[in-house]
Amino acid sequence: MSDLSTSHAGSARGVASASVPRHVALVMDGNGRWARQRYMPRFFGHKQGVDALVRAVNAFADRGVEYLTVFAFSSENWKRPSEEVSGLMSLVLVAVSKYLTKLAGDGVRIRIVGDRETVSDKLRKAWEHAESLTQHNQRITLSVAFNYGGRWDVVQACRRAIELGVKPEDVDEAWLARNMALSFAPDPDLFIRTGGEMRISNFLLWQAAYSELFFTECLWPDFGEAEIDAALNAYAQRDRRFGMIRPNQVVAEGA
Ligand code: IPE
Ligand code: IPE
Ligand code: MG
Image (cartoon, rainbow, N blue to C red; front, side):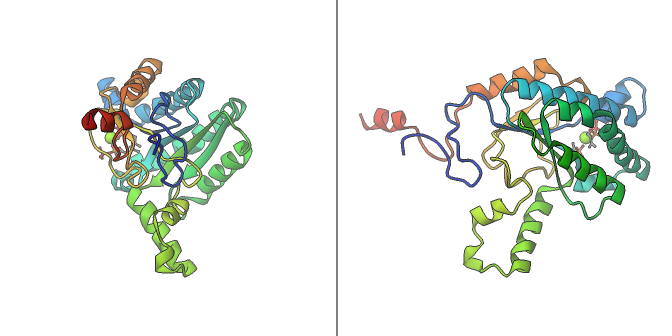
């Protein structure tokens, strides 16, 4: 093999020498702590978090990132107090009405990934509207993971295989990848988490198998161009091998 490109479904481009990630996954964590530091209710942090996201989408697009996938509400976030959950649900509707026109004008294609069955009709319709309005945009694809969990994603793909009567020998990695929530995107090259925790919290468990991980103490509402550049610079230094060894390593050891 002449380069370190991966044959994994959805990751067709050889990325070993690509210094800009095509796809960035982002756990936007730390809104509550950001608000608490300012003696404000947690909701204030979530509200500022939406503004930070709109800024971040444009900054990533300006740097050549093609796909940005953000974790906005996890399968487990339903376990939070009901006022916070309902606050987050209404914030999404407010955010769509406040920012959809701007994002559409900025060339952002919006996709929603996650379980749509268990959210309100109003929210589902807002998602569908955002997706259809922006479907032809090409500058960057923003996928919002809402009511999403990596385990849910694997389970829903398996269920689909059973429902469709797919033969067991046809259910392989490529089939599953084609039937998971991010089937339209290459696997994330870079996985960023703000807020200081060093965990995945059930985000893209399958798709992040070979993502480069970057954790920052920065709380999500403060995440701006300086932090984006720090993450992209760190990524550019990484040596991605995908389980292989570099051709020059083989030569060096054989010599
Ligand atoms: C992330 O911020 C946003 C969501 C999970 C919706 P948090 O609300 O988890 O903020 P912290 O981690 O409590 O500071
Ligand atoms: C992950 O953050 C989910 C989102 C950012 C939407 P959490 O705050 O829910 O994760 P834990 O509970 O600290 O693992
Ligand atoms: Mg958190």
